[in-house]
Length: 355
Image (tube, rainbow, N blue to C red):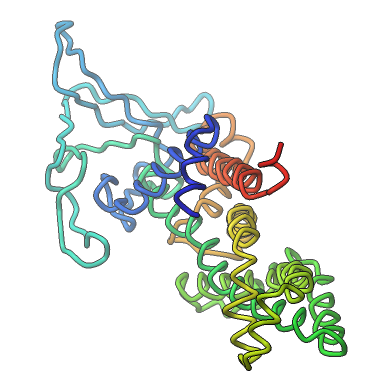
């Protein structure tokens, strides 16, 4: 089934582009330590808000050259009362590929020093400039994307089993059990989810690490979102439990839990796949929103949300547009997930197949 869905997605031009985009993003995030020229802890405070490095392939004699760059010199403009950067053309810094750089642990396990690209020890290369603390924006995008792009899937792994089992039990037993369980689910659904997230995130202890905050945000997102999913599953179970194969399982003495988990819930697979695909973007936006408000992942750890927070100042939008890159990546990722989710829904919808 999954293979057929993927083949149908690949035939659609927009879905194919979305799959390629998401594939590239997750590939870069997986190998972020190798691709990034600097580690996630790197900082050069003398280079705050440095513009993107200029890479040259033509030397001063108008001849082809190995790629090289110049460092920036920081100067103060007394007339406009602002700091400016200009290229220090007294020394070239050649870009080296697959060369040794800052040490790191590949995939968090294997100690390595080799990076996709880097410069000599005295050189600096900032493909997307730096932030207020002199940290490389390109490197932080890769490390921050790991949080922003995985939090949705982790939340789903908690949310969907709860919603499936809760909705399956409610729909199968019916009667008073169904009424009580659904009233509780509706009470959960009536809570404004984003405002609850803000309240819960704001009362978390200030001494918590970003990893602990990350796991708590995952749990909060999951515990808020399961109710709506369970209600839809319950409606599907109500129609499935009257099928002949369910009655046959009941007649041979199969336990109720086995009937629910082995015979009824597997029939909701199509809906689950579509719901999971369409739910990931909302969780990406929720995490980014919390981090943007300063209630999610905390500095110095990076996420696309807390990186985008720095771009909310009007002067940064005008003079430092590279700080808006996290917002662009959030937009592209959410759009790609929505395109794929919509097409999966069309593929798995029997009525659309007939059409």
